[in-house]
Image (tube, rainbow, N blue to C red; front, side):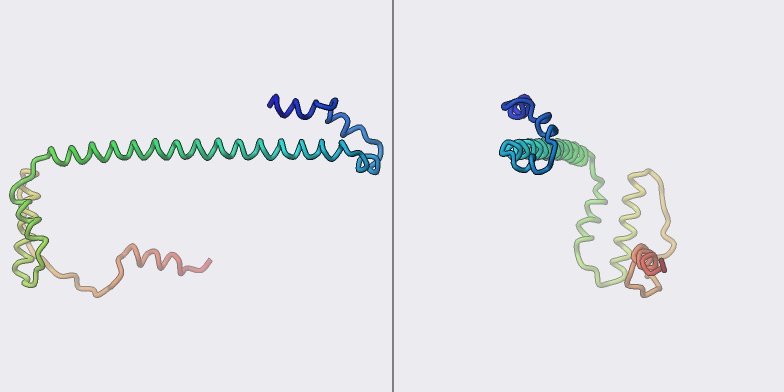
Length: 155
């Protein structure tokens, strides 16, 4: 800031000199007028870009801070998942789930095993009454259809 004030006060009080012209012709004819205008414009542009650079650095620094916080949270979550004991039935279900099932009896068995593993973890018991294939042949989910309906309404 002192640099800018020093430039403006080099040849006397620049601002009062700029405002002291009586006619526009006198103002345009003065060589010092255009150098003063240039100095003031350059100072304004430099201040704007300096503040812009400071803001960019600040947001970059915030981004780096949030990335490190997210990495620490992910590491804690991964450590908590690794420390948690896994039931043997759940391991068997995940190994079977990766295979491709063509037979409906195998699919029913896997669903039953998953429900049993879930119930064993809670200490409760569940009974599977029926497993039915979804009757409608919609190719879109309910959320997708709601979005389409919302976009198709009149304004």
